[in-house]
Amino acid sequence: MTSRRWRIGLGALVASALIAIGGAGAVILGLGGNQYPAAESVDAGFSRDMSVHHRQAVLMAGLARDRTTDPQVAVIAYDIETVQLNQVGQMQGWLSLWGLSQSTGEPMSWMGEMSGMDMTGFGGRMPGMATAEQLDELRAAEGNDFDVLFLQLMIRHHQGGTGMAEYAAEHADVYALRTLARSIAETQAAEIATLTDMLTARGGTPLSAP
Amino acid sequence: MANSRSRKSAPKRPASAGTRGQRFGDGATAGSAGKTKAGGTKAGNTKSGAAKSGPGRSGGRGGRGGRTAPPVRVGQPKPWGMIAATVAVILFAGGAIGYAVYQANSKAPPATAADIGEITEFEYTPGQEHVGTDVTYDESPPVGGPHDLIWADCDGAVYDQQIRSENAVHSMEHGAVWITYNPDDISGDDLSVLRGYVQDQAHIFLSPYADLPSPISLQSWNHQLFIDAVDDPRINDFIQTLRQNPAEYPEVGASCSQPEFLSDPVLEGEQSRTPQGGAVVTDAPAAP
Image (cartoon, rainbow over all chains, first blue to last red; front, side, top):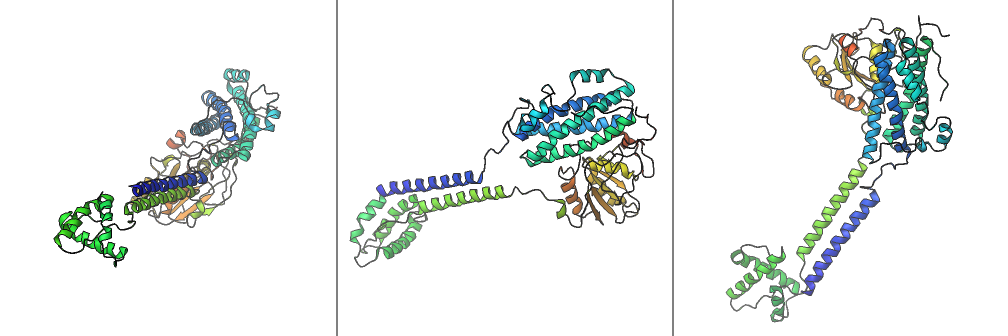
């Protein structure tokens, strides 16, 4: 009897040891670990702030697609609206996966030392964002005036967004996010040139850069 | 209880017999006895099996009359049950850990374009100009470069005529795969196979291309593959690897939908519908 109990005990000990070794091995391998970006990370901050930034571009581009009579403005507005809405979906999807809030909190805090510099003079808004007054002005404008103001605001909006995207492309941890940020930085930088040419062709001059 | 009783009988055994040898001999006896008495239970396989063999053994012993009773379980018996259980646990744990390690190491990046045989890669940078003029491309069909403001609809669009390349390049900038075929080589069933790759799919479009140097070619931004037959598995490899691959095309997330182009395509040889192109200014009002 003693021997049998001893053997059962030994078996239990061996089983426990194996389970412990397996568990320790899993921990060492990092299996099941939460490697998601933290709430204050560059990845999360960029996803939140660029979603807000993009949504204003989607709003202005949607307005332009509805209001403009110029087919060139209409098609580039459609391009901006669809691509940025898609990208908002990607960034909000990541935040959902990471279990993080979609709301902004402290805007631009993820950009480290650059944020203090960039935020001064913007009244807490992100770089390049149009003011409520400018949006009202855009809603009220018509014809070529509308196209010019839309292009002016969108150029400035892109200029602000490009800086944020460049920072994230350099400093974010998640590969997919760096890839998206790089794409945003490169395509918006190029689109600034296109929009500026369109603005010039319609008799407008760019606003001061953010 | 059978075990402890057997052990008590051990002193009756002949002193000359080695315990180990006797045990084996005894096991054989028990086995043969078990065939009739214990319903063929394999002795020693499980603890209950060993216990059941006890009565079988005594029955056999009784049948053999005067023979010395062969005692069982002399010394420490092999704990087969525990050994089997331990081995099972080790195998299970080893399998689980091995699988976990395999999973951890198999997070390799997806297949890259370079893995597709005979593919050619190019280096057009993102942010190419929008132009309203015709472009002389270095590649035929083109795979990147300046392009029209309006992209060709690439949401599974099947064009029966050759579309204007300047519009198709913009579609590839949006992440689409452009399948082209030489209409002299591909028709009928072959064309149906190509249509099958495209119809109802996103970010892919098909059009004929005159004087194509091979029957079929596939293009995406900065990638090209010439193919001879519609059953070439590289068609699928190309689509799987390069359609909307965010590392390979400039405008990540861009749309393929362009209903006006789909219903009334700009054909090769026709002029741009947006001659100013955005970048090229012709008769626009002068800046103040």
